[in-house]
Image (tube, rainbow, N blue to C red; front, side, top):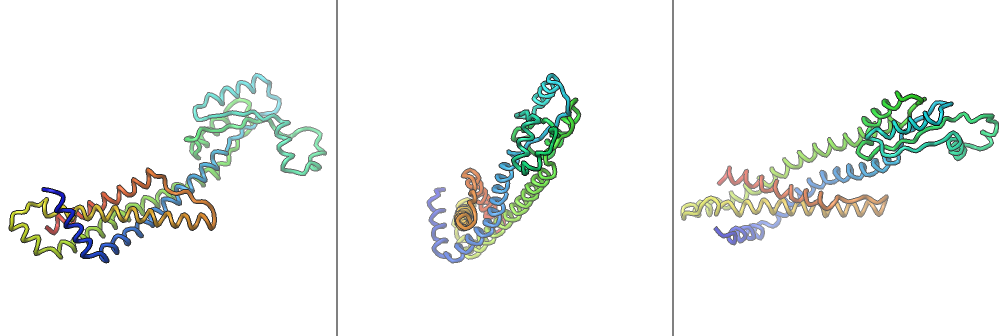
Length: 282
């Protein structure tokens, strides 16, 4: 059967019940806005923490009195660890110069010898900059010959990873909740439309119309509900981002591919909601 009739019926429904339909779309959009907002916060938080963690390094302090060959051997061992991206040597003099940047030089003038140890600054590859990997690498390095101690700010890394994990769980929870809500709202609206057209649907059946002829307009309407709600929620989110960015700081918007996935997901959910009502009430 031609889709022309389906679109004609859909347009008639939109013109006949514009307030109801637009109200439903806006309700869906506001619900999606909650999920999109949490998702946006998570992505921006992850971006900030990734930038912070990209500057984090593991500092490997060496024992005093190591020979040159022992220092070179330790370097080779560090470079052999797959998770390590870069290893930089910091001598005792370099450590003292760095210390003078943060402390009053007069406080250090009385030092007869340099008490600071030489060290290796170790930077991990991006995928490995998580608490579990940094802890594992640090424990491994501590066992190397010539290593006095290892520091990497483990508690900070752990808290960052835990925060991202909690926000991700919140995103999943709201995502599932909003998905159910979208299906329920679309299903309820399609059910109302079916009830309003109950008599004409019965007449169409008596005249020999098949199931596809009758249900297709309602199915298309559910898809359009989802599409309009998805696009509207993203527009609202963009306006919120612009408002907060101009007032406080710049907030990165959702990537284009993720925004398209959200719209596609709401279209599919709208289709599921319409199918539920169509199968139950036609």
